[in-house]
Length: 358
Image (cartoon, rainbow, N blue to C red; front, side, top):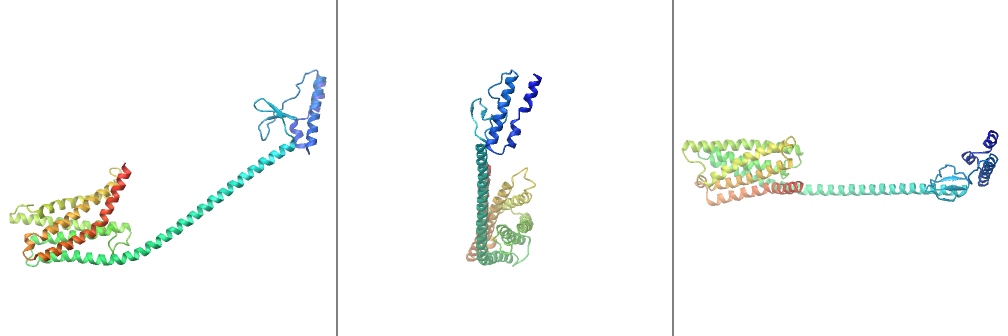
């Protein structure tokens, strides 16, 4: 057995050593046949019964099967003829060509996608440039219209407040004189300018940055709040001095409600200014929405209160019906111009709040 083993070992050449040395299909087949004959003869001499074929565990590079000589066993246990090395080379070439075709296709697809993305980006940039150009043109036209509207509104608000102030100090300067003066200045001038500043309808501030507009808005509102508070104290002390009852007229009742809502609106403005810091307690959209609604309502009530003051007995003594009607029309025109944009913004915020809540 030892001698036979020594004769068997040199003649059994491994398949994986013959494969890289084969130069052609004929050489490979010849080497495999010699290897098989030598193994069979050695096994017969030694008296060992060899199987008709030995399945060598060599995985096929393409199909994942095991091969031995000219035959191979599939992974499921079945056997089928194995192709020649030329067929293997052809299959490998086709496999490589398929990979190259897939890579080329992917490259073409990526190039197409990139090209489409660049085209879409170019279209968006062109659209943005056109939109910016149209916005600039509209801004120039809007500015000319805004100048005329602002001139008219400022003439009306300063004219009404100036006329009321003149009428208050025409005969004598008393404690009561400061009430109509500060109320008309606080609401008709300062609050109107503050609202127009944030709505972008003020010619002097519509080109300012948002931070500057916010600063001017709360500054004008703060000064207006101080003047309105002083005016409220003056009329209250004047009633006490004369011994008259408070809030007996329609003008007095509207005035009380207006002042209370104004103070609430100012408090809402503070929460709106610090809405980011207070976001854990209240959503910023709710803070802005509440401030906008209360501020708009208080401003409308203020214009109604001033109009009722124009028709009060004190003002009727020196002014006829035409003057009072002219003043009321002027006050209404100013109010309509001031509250158009805030009402639109309030409606938009209500829609946003409903859409984000539901």
